[in-house]
Image (cartoon, rainbow, N blue to C red):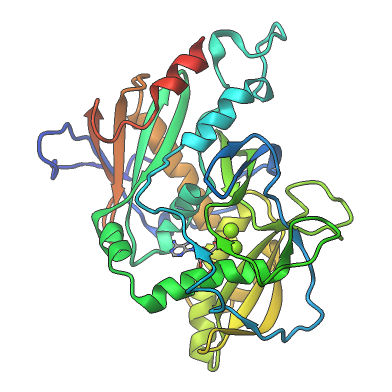
Length: 384
Ligand code: A3P
Ligand code: MG
Ligand code: MG
């Protein structure tokens, strides 16, 4: 932080809880040079099977198969009615899968000075542990005008754990999705099925079932300025023709979007969609995004590859467009704010950070509440 101007005192708008500072979200404040963001290193991975069971390995990682045509005519609606097993969205998994991974991979965290692993006091020597998707939301906050967020933070044994809480608005939207929205969501996963095989020598099987319980997640370590980060993120597939073969450089992100017919649609794509695509893939160091553009019948009519690190060059000619440096400087400042606010190390304590478009970030403090998210099995096993 260069100044304390970003803080101001705030009257508590939530009932019954302690209040503190607020934190302003303004693009101009963060429009400076790129902060230090270290090349992300994969320190492990895990898989979730069709029953959402955790495995400490890469069994669910799919292999990308380049289609023979750039105009493939994939039908993204195929199987929506009869070959779709949808993950139960009522189950809030919070950080549970990541925490399971941490417990069985303590040795992958930095060791103590005497070289004993795990480190003395079972300190993980990591400032933040969270999901990549939560950080994507933080990164894009300075440019977001629709969806707010709630982030629960707990400081436990020297590490800040950050777990998103669904807003009332997001819950309402989720419970009132139209059939068309549900079908579009399905289409994103169906696209993956058209392009991915289970094995390096295999072929995609578009006749199969789409089961959105299944996932492969990479766990990466990186650093943003003074903050060391470990986060997990779902990865769609790997490019087996990738010369280096080393994760995360060999990973690919798959995306669908509506075909664009006029400059206005192109502009909106640059301004509002590419920022999310960029943030999601930039964070774990996924270098390439394969986009499928669909028509209004749900058919993928064209494919296009985007280099994550070049996305910004595509958008920078748009007036008032987003800047990667603003996103990262803002994230850096927010994480510093979290460290300044959350000082009591207690697995039962949650600081709930709240943001709505056009407003400041504020927080409320909760002891032993519905917001506590570190399970007893984690707290006990990490320490002993
Ligand atoms: P598309 O992104 O191609 O639309 P991901 O792209 O992160 O791998 O996610 C795969 C698919 O899950 C998405 O495909 C989309 O269909 C669905 N999805 C992901 N995040 C979503 C969200 N916040 N709301 C609705 N659907 C989402
Ligand atoms: Mg995915
Ligand atoms: Mg994807």
